[in-house]
Figure (cartoon, rainbow, N blue to C red):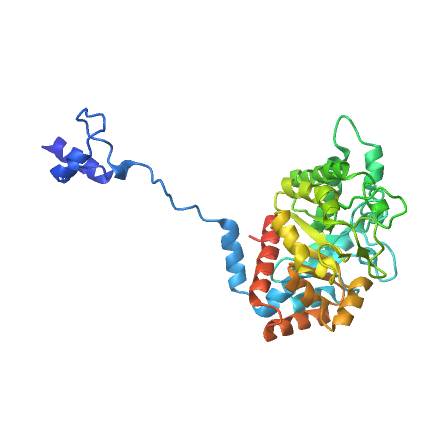
Length: 404
């Protein structure tokens, strides 16, 4: 009797007992082979539609997002140029998503290079001032555009250009991947978590504005270079974001820092050349890569607006290149944008966010944060668009290990 009760209890506990199953149900549970043996009850089989495991990334993003004010949301959409004074206080006041550092930010008040200790302390003061960790970025392309590596207290020498590295390519290891590994490890040690590189533009004309910053080779070679850099940065696993620029491809156009640049090339040129390096980087990215959009006016995509303010350009980036990461503007203080926004009597930041960007890079954040808030209140800028951008920014920060 004891043995029978023990067996009955065991069957009940594992949910497989058929003692109380009606005869007609017991008959239907016989094996299809007709052997007379009972099939395994469905309660004992694995659930064919199990509940998905909790998504820690989404849970963290949702928790932060749900507690944010409108001011905090809008502030997160600004990757602001670090101000010369009161950086920590202003980061806190405007809830800024990030600071991009330029040459002056690596020097002291009297123009001397900061020591490693001084620089790290300064950057940490920005992080200590805010409730949501900041993105701290720098243009460390190598060659003609370097910021941190000009400081001899931080680097032994300025970082080399893509063209110099290409000439010293090794058969034993990929010099591009090795270079980005070493470069980003140093940046991370100093508190920098975003490198505004690589330059993905295709240029083979030494006389063009962008040439010195590029690989200087055709689209196929440039695509291989970009993939190596992005994979090298991924492999470092040190919490450094990369920024591919300048989408949709700069070409041989004029300098948008000083005026408007019109790109008259057909869409086929972009699809067969300029897009290829961006596609290569997107394919190998682990989610820590952003794309920066240029200020060129690309007639085949949008004849009325600069690319950074064009919904059509962001649509191509999202749908044709299948990029779902954060999209950034080039610096909105550039003359090409200042002139256009002035002619439209609108805020460049509002235009960029409404078009589809997720973070605006600008010096004039104090004025433009207020303009974005006003546009959000009036309905000129939709809440849905802002919320989408905020979630992308928070996702980027999570993927960089800044949010937990």
